[in-house]
Amino acid sequence: MAIDIKHTLSNNSTLSPLSGHKNTEAKTALSQQSRTVPSDSVSITSQAQQVQGAQSSLAQLPEMDMAKIDAIKLAISEGHYKIDPEKLAKNIANLENELVQNKI
Image (cartoon, rainbow, N blue to C red; front, side, top):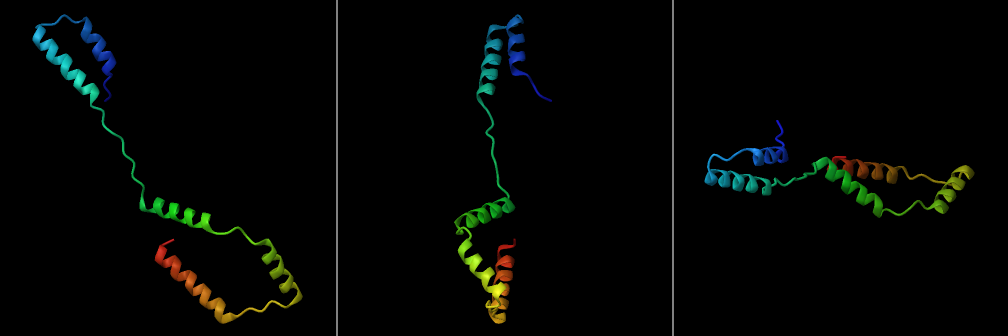
């Protein structure tokens, strides 16, 4: 349940005080309560931190080298592109290891 402090304070000014001392204490207490404001906090989950890290890593990668891509396409279409199956298998295994280590 929310308490409207402004509404409460404005209503207190129209009430007649029972005792000047008690009314002063009440105003002081209300004044101190209004000054004490809880601070907000934010926490980032580990998944969000991983996403942030992945974004940083991607930002550091170079753009695609279209000249290299075109050269590979041409070599494939002409039948000159050779695939080294051992190197390909090694690269796939390295990628899988990185994915497991980074839990992506």
